[in-house]
Amino acid sequence: MKMRALFHTAHLQAQRRLTNLTCARANTSGQATVEFALTISIFIMLLFGFLGLAIVFFAWLTTVSAAREGARFVISNPSASDTQIKNAICSSSIMLGGNTTNCNNLTNANLIITTEPASADRIPNAQISVKVQYRAQVPTLGVTWINGSRMTFLGPIWVSSQAVMRIDP
Image: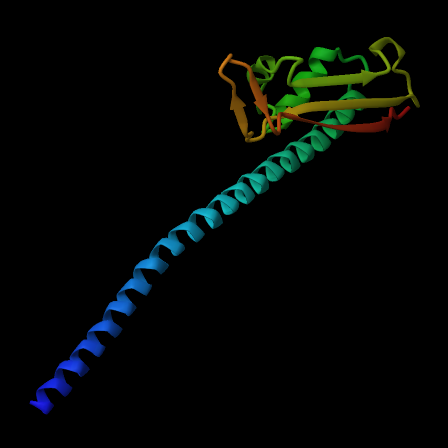
């Protein structure tokens, strides 16, 4: 009888230990889910931030290249019109369309090209300035309110570049 009571006591203790272990595991699985949700949200925000930064950097590099190409085109064709300069810039740039038909689709709301001086004042030894401004579309976080108005936390970003060259005599 004593042996049976001893066995029964050992069995109950083992069962309690097993129950405590399964309860502890059940509690930690919920904790892991909450930690995952918090971590993944921060990771996704960082990912979109780096993506936006890469888009803005690529747009800036594009404007630098486009301004140089525009200045080179004006140096080789001093009497070129603003439309010809814009077409030359767009045909040399992948982001700005890569050809003149896509370039015409870019309105002044997204692409502004300024050339100084005017074509009549372009004489030998004159400085030519070509400024390219481009509106880079970045991924944004936005909230739409009940009344339909929208608020964005990071909107399109304007990047610009300017190239100055001299017309050779």
